[in-house]
Amino acid sequence: MMDDITKMDVFYESAKSGFEDNWSDQREADIHKIITELKMVKCIDDNHEIGYQSIKSLVFGLVAARDFNFMTTRFKYENYANNQKIVGNVLYSIPEDHPFYVPTKKKHVRCAHFAMGLILSVNNDDIKNNQVRVCEVLTMDLGGSFPKWILKKIAPFLVVRAKRLVEKKLDPEETLKKREKNNFKKDYEPLFTN
Image 1 (tube, one colour):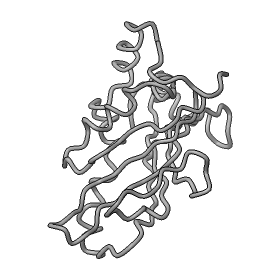
Image 2 (cartoon, rainbow, N blue to C red):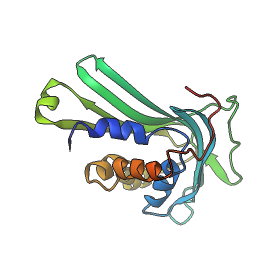
Image 3 (cartoon, rainbow, N blue to C red):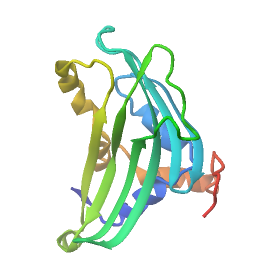
Image 4 (cartoon, rainbow, N blue to C red):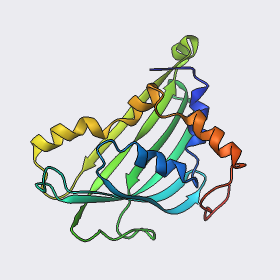
């Protein structure tokens, strides 16, 4: 849980596509320094980007380096099911026939399927208590051979964004303040404008 339901809209605005800080914040949060490349491939519109990430080989080379090609999507729904509001920022793998697909890097294994992200929601009780539910989603097929004991060791480190958000180490308000100083000028031009 996170205090202050107004943070939901701030989180949603900070997830807007086209800004380099969406990518640099993730690079800086790489506490184990396993990311070898993380970049935006194409900004589609305010809500969608195509990205690419590669990570180095793990456990002294026992596990091959991996790479990921994905789309990020932000969303906001009001009065949805039992929730008054849901906002999120998720990313998910894209298929080989996608127009912005990046080929697998040499000596890397492509992560076959994955989806991950943050979803924030409030229902009527949460509104009364001024609290936000924070949920981190992760599902993946890492492709290739990946020993279970290694996966169990690294799994807790894969889901750290929710913890960083609740502990205020991931600060959407600060992100928006920095963007405001630059008149909200995007670093990447979108293919489509809303």
